[in-house]
Image 1: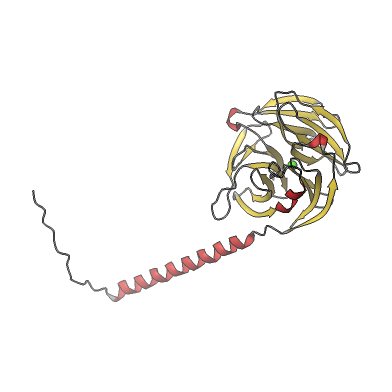
Image 2: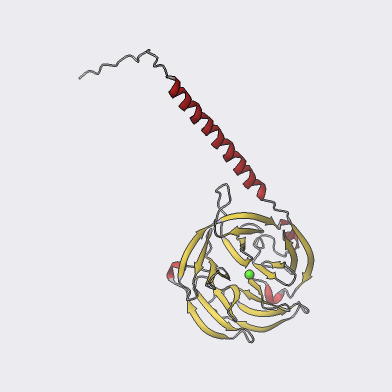
Length: 288
Ligand SMILES: [Ca+2]
């Protein structure tokens, strides 16, 4: 069978004045939407200011006992709790702010566990473990285990932990699991929601690690770069990030020290203490 190809018609179909008016309105709308999009995206880009922080103090710490910092949190105005993790070498302890080269209440973890993030929720210390999905609930005075609780299989691994209370006093527990997501659990550690976090331009934030929730913002480190992200969990977007690359030079192993694995907020002064793996110092910083 042979196909017959028709010649395109040269006939011009004229628009009437009503159609021209409609086309003009559509064109104007398209231009308006494009300009609005450009302005919005420019504004979002302008939000990021990676150097918008102040380093207040560099504080020498006990380095030998705290080489593998995985989580950090202020218990009160005078003490930090720190979780350190490495298989066969995990522990949790307190650090007195007036005596940073000394640790106290040291508790060693069983070799099976790698310690991860730490938080204080309703008067108990919650310490995560990595792929074991075990959470140790500890006495806030002695750090001895009061209860073991296993995370659901859908969590897979757990790195950072923090929490907040919503309007009706409902507890929300935040956990990072080595992805670009934040898991929201209820008080019974049941997974309620998963928030995918991204930059405004859609690019990935990488593996989220240590976290600290402060006044509606989740501050999170990532495993690849020495930065802290300020995340709006309602939108899932990064509102700002803080680049601490300059601090890597002060760590002993620059290849292994790219993660800020300790982020703790001190409400009395509205400042943060940060540190990382193989970092012999705490850094007192103000994030703007
Ligand atoms: Ca923390």
